[in-house]
Length: 408
Image (cartoon, rainbow, N blue to C red):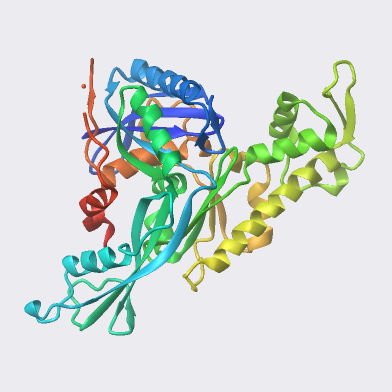
């Protein structure tokens, strides 16, 4: 049983979780804390002191509930500064082992793929092999096969140096060390995707408040990721501007009666809401209200469809689309995605979660639960004590530590 902590840094709330996992992949939540996010905008730390206080408040809640002190944690990252691209590493297969491909050959190929200089002012975040070509023949698992030349295509994710450094700083300001920084949608994928999803091809859509992370997973590997600067708050801001509402009323009304598919039969339903000026209510039709929501949702889907076209994977996504994140709770959003994708759609929540789980079985908590699973699969047990310093390790060293788990 390993004890792991995760911190999901969102633009509206910070979630810290302390949990244990065992060999059966079951998560037992010991404690969690939720605090309003201050000093964070679109996934970026914009005010260090305010962000530190928010994260500290979340950590303190989790510690008090769980009876553990958080010494280190896996932390999420998102934002439009995230970039991703594909590179290829070719190697000759050593004759020393009669031309049989070994893990070491794949490691050498990955090293070559990532050796090319990165764009300026970015830091390497993830390096993920996804396609193998052995002597011009595409294979899913080259280990043990014989050949002369192996090419490994890797999906590389980078982030702005200052963005990740500020995340590290605010967490360390709370006397918590970093186990790893994980792209938000990759963490969520750990929480909601099944092995069948990963093999058959799936589009993961993680809708946050200010951004939407997408990941395209097939044949057991991640082929493409992207962060779209549109989220649940983008819809709320549209409603504020279009109907002259204050923020609280717009958000509350979106959550209570908002729908991603506008019903034309609602054109006679008139709602009266508090406007931006006291004593001057705003009257509008429910149809127009939801048409504004649907327009922004359609735009988001347009972005996602474009990213599908940019993926290197040319096969079918037979497992369809999995929606998660707080924004996935918008009424009828799954119906709109089905109309646009004509593929299976489901709302992703995390299975096999026990312990202190009141209110956790919703899409809003998939990232922090995914951080726990990520830590179990790819890392070591965190530094936690009941009443307990790791250093930020070079990303390639961390990559090598869990590559054997990642490889086929």
